[in-house]
Amino acid sequence: MAVLGIAALALGPAVLAQIDGDRKGVAPVDSSGSFEVGGIDVDVVAPSAQAARSAGWRIAQRKGWQLLSRRLGAGGGLVPDGTLDAIVAGIVVENEQIGPNRYIARLGVLFDRSRAAEILGIAGQVNRSPPLLVIPVQWSGGAPHVFERRTAWQEAWARFRTGNSTVDYVRPTGTGPDSLLLNAGQVLRPGRGWWRTVLGQYGALDVVIPVVHLYPTYPGGPVVGAFQARFGPDNRLIAQFNLRVSSADAIPALLDEGVKRLDAAYQGALNSGILRVDPSLFAPPEPEPLVGEDAGDAVPGADEGDLAIADRPAAATTTISVQADTPNAASVTAVESTLRGVPGVRSAATTSLALGGISVVRVGFEGSIAQLQGALEARGWQVIAGNGALRIFRTVTPTAPPNSAPDNATQQ
Image (cartoon, rainbow, N blue to C red; front, side, top):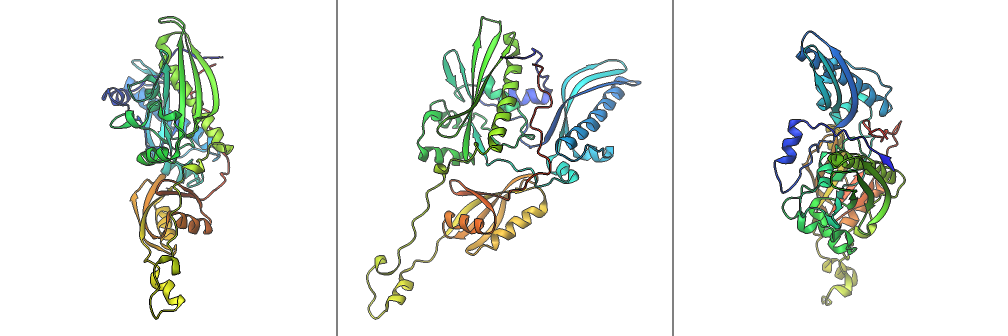
């Protein structure tokens, strides 16, 4: 059993405000998908406290860029400070001590994903999983909780920054109908029809179910967390492990480390082909229209060929959402052009733009979603079908796979 240190992550004021603002739900603190590099130690002496802090942040940016570059297989070279200022999305203060002329801190750096990927020459090479709905189940006091009330486990998943993960997590906030649709009972229901309805509400194609059982030894004493990585409508177990902290005050640190390890387990399952969309969650194909004598009564004076043409109904236009990776503006144009070139497509317009992420294109197609899937696969696309939606991507092997190990892993 691994043992965690008791020092909890120091959250900045903006993070605390975002979590504590709404007692009914917890919104993710970062959904931008930025690259994150953490655990950067700096120790700077300067004429003033402000100058020392500014210099420390500057050094953290440089170190962070070198670490990110090496992790993504780009060699670890430096870029000018002006370029770093343009691509750094934020500084995460994990711990800091400020003196009159000295600054000692452990920092994290967030890099804008699309800009950093273009500079490193890896734009479009890091593929992510299809969107997967997260249902965090916490067992405490002998009962399971998801969104019925606010839990420390949900807060831990809200704090987790997903930019370094190859898993595309869809994290509900716990507000609105979440507590009714997503509960501990739902994860035990294998019925595919209802799962298709639920997943369609959140724009996901499948589900991951991270579970934690908290076992306090005595009030205020050591706490053991038993973690499980589960997946899919059949609640399949992928991995499990135990972690321990010395006091109840360190439960947030326990859960944060649990989230990181579960994410590593999910990424490993994705790379090995275990974490893939259940085909039974795909919408069933629509029946083909009847033609000829089975479609209706014979028309006097018409031969058999004319009858088939006359009785064939006009193709109805189906609206289909297509999700595609769009690392830059040129890729958006390329995806739209590809879709418009498919026979039967009458329109293709981007309705949700996410440069460096996954954009959504609304397609008007004369046919069924299965027919559009087949046409795209014939053109070399990898296609995953969901409830009224398609996820398309081209498989590209990275020159060097990203390192999925946490940068700021707690000492064991």
